[in-house]
Amino acid sequence: MQFIESEYTDTLEIKKSKFITYITSYDKFDCLMKRLKEEHPKARHFVYAYRFLNNFDQIVENSSDDGEPKGTSGKPTLSVLSGSSLINTAVIVVRYFGGTRLGTGGLVKAYSDAVNLVLKSSILKDYVKLEYKKLFIEYSQLSQIEYLISNVDVKIIDKIFSEKICLKLEASREEYDKLSSELFRDNILEDL
Image (cartoon, rainbow, N blue to C red; front, side, top):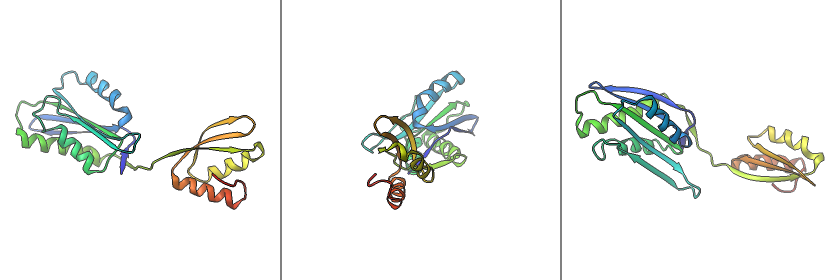
C-alpha cells in the first residue's frame, strides 16, 4: 500500500471541459475542499474520493458524484485510488463544464484519466504502520540511547523526566527490532 503526503495538481481538458485534479493526504481533505470552493466559485462540480485506514486497520472509502450522473465520476475516481492501492489519500476533481455533454462513458473515462494524470506527477510513499512505545531508562543511559536511536529510523516524540526518563517512541516494528538488537548487543537494556 502507498499514500500521498503532499498536495499535487494537474489539469485535463476534454471538449472544452476542464478537469482540475488535486490529490493530497486524507487528513487535509476538508481544508482542501473548503479552499477549492473558495478558489473556484464558478466550477460546476467538486467530485471527490478518499480511502483511509481506521483505528482497526480497516480501509474506509467514500466518493461523491456532486451532481454528475450517478456512478459516472465519484466511483471511477475511487476506482483509480483503489486500483493504485492508495490509502490515507484523498482526491478532488474540480470540473468546469465546457458546453459539450460527454455522455456517461465519456464522463467515466474523463474522471479516471484526470486522476491517473495527477498520479503520474505525484510522489507516492510506501505505507508503514507505526507503533508507539515507551522506553524507561536511567539518566546515565540517556546520551548513549539517544545515539543508538539516531542510527535507526526511530523517532523520539517526547521525553518525560521523573525517577527515570521515559522516552516516547514512534517507529515501525522492523525499526524497533533493529533498536532492540542494538540495545541487547551493547547490554544496555534487557527488553524493549
